[in-house]
Length: 289
Image 1: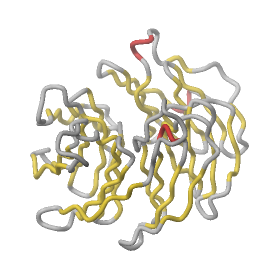
Image 2: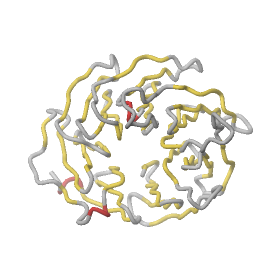
Image 3: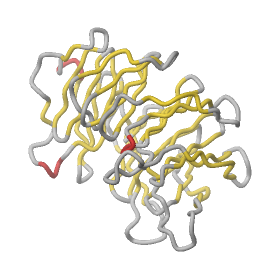
Image 4: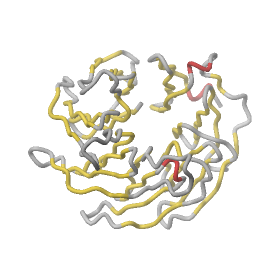
């Protein structure tokens, strides 16, 4: 689930639903094409007049944001002829560069200004050397101040890349997490990373660790110095100015395990939580603290 220009984009398997975040009215619903019936949407990013949609069959579908008609489909190559296509778990845009995070630990880079859109290179960034039980899939990508932050999920690291030129220089690796990283958020000049073991807050300037929060986090969202953290079926809140937990009962957004939180977003005083089955719940942020 993502927010862009007053529009809330939510996914359910192979369908994208678009909502007006102010009025909460549905704008459109788009069924995505695919190469087999088992494909589903895993990631989204919006840039100007285009919506990029990453799927588990290794494709990225490109649509217009005016009527959501198809523009093109980017098909990423595999390492071997008979290998299963690495799923597209994360997407990010910087200027005319599309970054595609895959479950084989690589990030493909496309030039979206070219016609047709062309693949420039691949950043082979993450591996699973830490444990045979973890996979290196690139779960999260974030862009801030010309830097790309990527997580290898199971390898528990965050890697930093310079996006200001096409050399994509590797600037460093952050290694404080003990479990796979599930989410990233930006707050002022700080990077917030969430995993099941803790939440870490980093400086985007010198990449130093500022603080750790004693809670796990699957999804993160920030509004007015408040960090909203989802963990399975509930949400807790932290004051980012003091790094203290707000002393209220956890916000129970789901009553059954099958309604687990699958995404968080905040917009103009509203908190949106996405759930299995295509349900989106809306809360007034003022009433939660």
